[in-house]
Length: 525
Ligand SMILES: *[C@@H]1O[C@H](CO)[C@@H](O)[C@H](O)[C@H]1NC(C)=O
Ligand SMILES: *[C@@H]1O[C@H](CO)[C@@H](O)[C@H](O)[C@H]1NC(C)=O
Ligand SMILES: *[C@@H]1O[C@H](CO)[C@@H](O)[C@H](O)[C@H]1NC(C)=O
Ligand SMILES: *[C@@H]1O[C@H](CO)[C@@H](O)[C@H](O)[C@H]1NC(C)=O
Image (cartoon, rainbow, N blue to C red; front, top):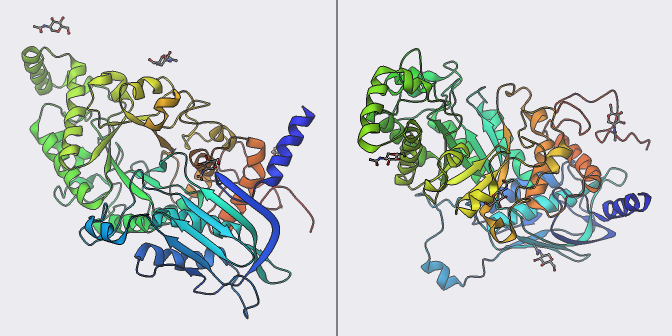
């Protein structure tokens, strides 16, 4: 036992102070001085994503300002080369660019990078701008300020890095509590610190419908209050903030369950005033409203995915509402359907509508649990229950996202008793045969919003989300080796204004215990 601990400690000692840990690294102990300046990050200034990042990373890498320049490394050269010749590139249409020519991140983008820091030069190479962003984050974490000499230092390193999973996210729920735009922008700012690249925005739920949908302007009557709403411009700001950070924004409109809030604006889509969901499967109006909502969403959210929910559907309102009963009896007779087929009809129609807007549907795993291989193969199955057999999902040809693992609901951040180490112990692919593992695209920390708003969001999410981030990016899983790095990363989050809770607390967002260092490892200088 003793020797095992020593080995773990030695491995931990050799790991560079980075979160998540890069795939391949070789770092010396040699400390090099870097000379900060506003032009430290040399990028192609003609690229708006890179130009913004070069500016953003100055205070992140050099947070304590600087005085007169000394002697040392004066720059990090950032080179993006996709390996395609200029002629061929000119002949290609830009990938996933919007009408204004802006480039958006997408599933499967190459996020690899190579970072080389020597005594004489520092270079970052990537095949896409998104890879360059990940490398800039790594560089910023390598820089340390020496308060005694008032200099910034890095260690000489060669790093070759790429993510293990392409889809690494956080779900936020603005249906259970409104999350102000300022909170969302702050959330988006922090995701790339842990190399996360997806914000899954569960916009609406039973309790509220906060977002403007121009073609169905009454829907946001379902908001908690008139001030707790997102205008189209608010949504655009969040999407743009995310784009510049290489973060995709995937909206969710959960139907037919979790949708009572739709009744405030359009009572016609609900079975009755006393029995409101699931939304009325018998009416064309229901699908017309959904079509308009998804059409509006397609204009606002450039990402290729849209989440349609589909979870926790209790069909008793359909059975007890006379008009729906009548419809059910008629179609059930005509098409030999069961009541479950009506649920299937709803979710497959929703998916069809999403595809008609050129979006790929994501649906919660109940939809697979109920209907299995009958779903359209483009559907992404979002697994959240231990009872769903992930191998069966991928064997049937579906891509999936996974939020369960070592303990039930371990990536459900609303479960306050789940510790960072339990979240860290889960690997979405663990139970899937090797040849099917790439069908597991990744997963999310799920921040269901019942007890979270702008006041406690950071401390509930962080640092547990960082643990998830490392499992999705890196190939390491040793909790003991991760602990000191994660403690250091928590200090970094605090320094960057993200209110991450202490690692060692039993209920996620507990306050620090008494006076002490951010690492909880009290040490005298
Ligand atoms: C890391 O190194 C291994 C072994 O040389 C190699 O197979 C792998 O592709 C490297 N990963 C990256 C991201 O460069
Ligand atoms: C109706 O469905 C049942 C069960 O799914 C099946 O046994 C029966 O043969 C079907 N009837 C017709 C006319 O298709
Ligand atoms: C999951 O499905 C696979 C493939 O059908 C099967 O081999 C495996 O036994 C199932 N696992 C569980 C726990 O049921
Ligand atoms: C974690 O907290 C508990 C209770 O406050 C304490 O007993 C324990 O020593 C702490 N563990 C570490 C590693 O700091």
